[in-house]
Image (cartoon, rainbow, N blue to C red; front, side, top):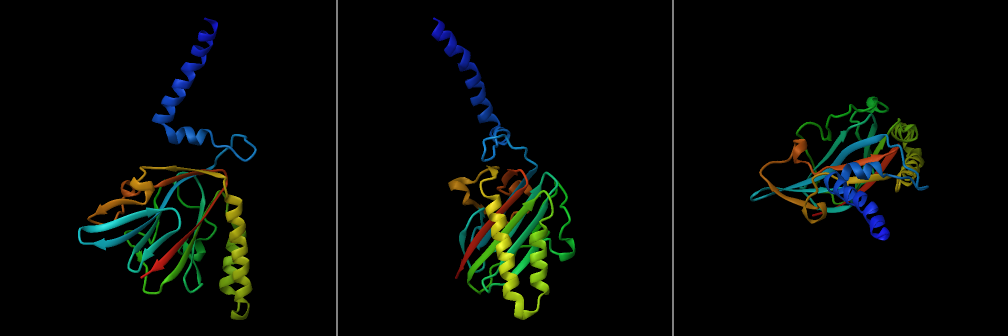
Length: 240
């Protein structure tokens, strides 16, 4: 009889926890985020993001959302979506198939080091525009960084790389690449990713649309919760 009472004592909290997990999975996951030592982490960065690839088909537009390496064909349109819900600094770089490194966000180098406005969607390209994969095939590598404070090492490495004489550009590029690897390593396994309105088939392709998505309600966002830094590398294998 005593053993049954003990089971009852623990059964009710377990049932309540299961109900909370089903009804509020995102909130529960955030509350339980821990660092490598097992201690509960005090998260300061919270944002939504995703990449979209769109191609024209007879029935309209086929849209794919992806947050990892992917193979896309010439003519595919691309757009990056980002919505911060906390004060942060965002950087989006691309290394083209020709090896050139470009800063996409912020779009103006004068805006480097300035925080982005919370609760407002930021995109690349801006407004309703989309950018397309041209006829030059190869790997397009995107580097996406979000931080609670300005990333001065990345900023300095990028600005020096662009302002350096041509005979020293290679060393500047190596400095930039070294800083980027450091950011990626620092960010590894330090964040929690939660799917928001996850798409079918593991978030690969949601389906067909008549027009390109521009409204936040049309975006299959990934929510990221982390303490101070999020760094992501996405490689697009561009084929014909």
